[in-house]
Image 1 (cartoon, rainbow over the protein chains, first blue to last red):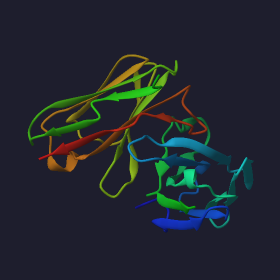
Image 2: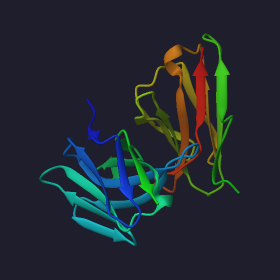
Image 3: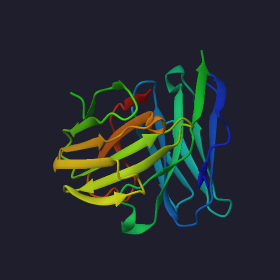
Image 4: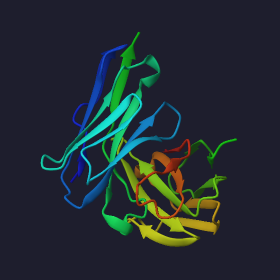
Length: 115
Length: 114
């Protein structure tokens, strides 16, 4: 039972346009949501996160939107750059002080930004 | 200077062998983790240690034994390797128990069991 799902295995976008990566989850106990970015032969690196009490968090070109009622979050990258080409993982963390770094990850979406 | 480093990066071995993967972090964090990325690309937590104490053990077979000699190191020893153990193993660290989920990952160790 996969509690975090990224239904698009890949996404291809032109440089300068918007990239939208989607993620759905099923567990209502998730309280914190994160996006990680991974280049080949490297470990995932933290990109941006959002608490369940918010519906939007922005950091430069990256914005994460959370729709709790739909159990859906999305990552918007605008404008997209070729250096953004990577695998993007959505992850979720349980509520409060019990998470202990126990993240549940989606399968990842391969983003390719064409020059 | 790598923040979270794992050795070896690649490991090819035969079924039934015993192998270890080492992890060290120089971030001064007090919590370390092992995650496994399987063939379907899902990253799943295996173990978590806080101040050398085991706090998460996610129903991993007891052939897997983590050891944390100090806060900066978390090693993973695997006995009697099986084909299904082939995966990429990621070590990670965080300060505190990472309620916000921000972990720092190593580059991964790709284990292939033949």
